[in-house]
Amino acid sequence: MQWHSVQAFIEMGGYGFYVWSSFGFTFFLMLLELWSLKKRRQAVKNLEAGVA
Image (spheres, rainbow, N blue to C red):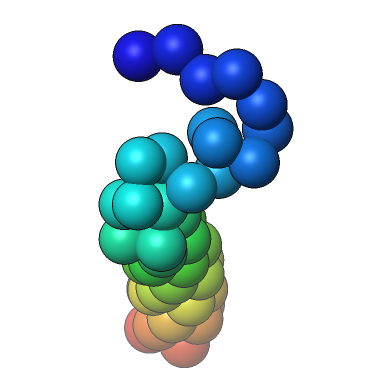
C-alpha cells in the first residue's frame, strides 16, 4: 500500500482508529508486563534477603 500523504497514512483507508488503538494497547500491555516483572523481581529479592 502506498499513501500520498501523512493524513492518508494515519487514516489507513478507514481502519486507522482500529490499527492505531491496537498498537497503543499492545504498547501499554508491554509496559505493564515490564513493570510487573520488575515488581516480581523486587519481591523475590526482598524474600531472599529476609530468609537469608
